[in-house]
Every structure is written in C-alpha cells, then in structure tokens.
Length: 233
Image 1 (spheres, rainbow, N blue to C red):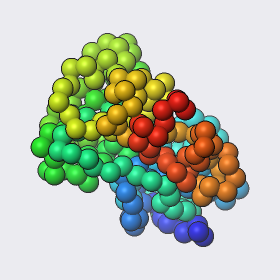
Image 2 (cartoon, helix red, strand yellow):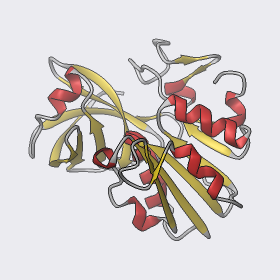
Image 3 (spheres, rainbow, N blue to C red):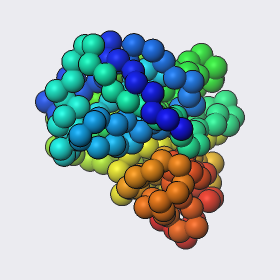
C-alpha cells in the first residue's frame, strides 16, 4: 500500500512526554489495528489508532521526538490500517490498559458505547502524571485506576485490580508485555483478547521482524485470542 499524505488538524500534549495527533481526515479501521507513519528523512514507525483520525504518541526516541515537533497543517504520510482488531464477545467486558496502551482500548470503548450491558475499565500507570485516559471513562460504567506510587487510585499494578471485577464475558487488554502476561495468567488464557507489541518494520508480514512463535504480529495480530498465545508468552 502506498503511503497517503495527510495533514495534522491539531496537536497537543496531555503529559510531558505524550502527545495527541489529530488528523484532518479519518481512516476506516477496527479498534486494535495500527498504521505506519512515515516522516521523510526520519523513518517510519507503527502506531495504534485511538480513533479513525487520532494518534496518542509517547516520546521514546528520535522518531517520536520529531513527531512532537509537528503542528497544525504539517503533513505526515500514513500506510494502513493494518492487522487484526478486537471483536466484541458477549455482553459484559473488562478492558485493561497500561500506560500508553490506552489507544486501542479507548477506540474499543468509544466504538461500542451503549452496546454492552456492563463495561469496566481498569487502567494502570507509573504515577498520576503519567495517566493518559483521554475521555475514556465517559464510555465505561466503572473506572478503576492503579499507579505504581499510589499517587492516583490504588497503589500497585493494574492487574491487582482485576480480582475486584467479577462476572464478565470477555477481557480486552493492551499494555506492556509484562502486563499482558499477567492478564493472560489471571484469565487462564480463556475469554481474553490481547494486543501484542513487537518491533515492526514493514507492517505487512514481509520482513519477519515482528515474529512471535509461528505468528507475525503485524499480519496475524496485533490482537490475539488468549488461547492462541498459550506456550508463547
């Protein structure tokens, strides 16, 4: 797929190292899918979509540092969306997000607002200053927060909060791999869908850099059923 030039409608910081990019036009996507963003002379990186025209980006290196310089009217080049997304199963859901793993969970919440009987959002971050929720709580029936230092919500890791939520049909999760591993262990790999992170270069299953056992995350994921990952993570 050829990269499409798109222009930034608005850009703003929500924490010191997390920036929201709103594009002028939207993409047809499923929550959990990702795009490849190219900046001439800088490179290309994958990002999950928070909405059809919304990206939430954490500053972690040269590429994202350049993204933080982008302002209204600047062009970016986009390929995608690529990969698999989340699928709603049942009528009650627990959605678990860690740090900047919130974008696909936010999209899932927003796209299915009012369609489920009960949705509990469980969110974890290092501290209150690292919380990136956007307006996600407005699409959930309950919000539970954990921070490593206890500055907001319960002190501890986000998966500690999962024991407080009972009687759900499906768990949906996105975050650091350690968190994902803990979610899978808590659920016994059953009735759970998780978004996996791996280094992606091509985004279309050609280069093999994102291999996860027999899977390529960009092609077969990034969203997987828990059962598919048993023995791999």
